[in-house]
Length: 254
Image (tube, rainbow, N blue to C red):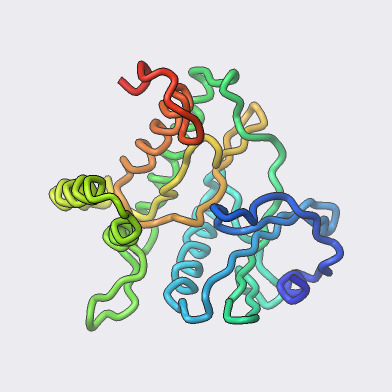
């Protein structure tokens, strides 16, 4: 933390724990104040041997920066003192990566505040992202080796990682069937590109006037419909009981 925060001109003692750091977390976040503005430092860890992980991280930060510069309502990285969009430190077999961003005022939307205006704002924010991403230089996948065609980011790589993790044969069979269906879909700039890939209601902040998208740490090349279905799924699951508790009402799912 001392090394990572120094890249932004602040000391470790200036950091206050914000959230994350649990077994299911993709990182850990701290806050600090600089030039009168509250900032968030997000830290992620990768195995020192995971060079593709570093490349994925870099690709995602470049994409976030592109969206932020285009005026999409997101939190996007500030440049470190070096001019890079992140700082890096290596210790005990791990590579630690950190990036800093402005802390956004507001809070995640409460279920009781869900209404037509909220859903319209959420939809238009994701829709603007899909509009702007059609101007991004890469849109089908991120290449590592042009000669072999090996890629680091793309929906197939994501599918394979989940398939490899799955230990249930029936689920794996369904997962394979879903891949076959996806492979039949058109890939065109007006329906496919670099997307957020996780814009559920807990990854947005609202102050009542606007919605801001957070957490692009799984951003990937996918169909735009994926973002829409993830947002809709989070609404339905919350009403039906949610992932973290038993199903209480299947009606909304139907």
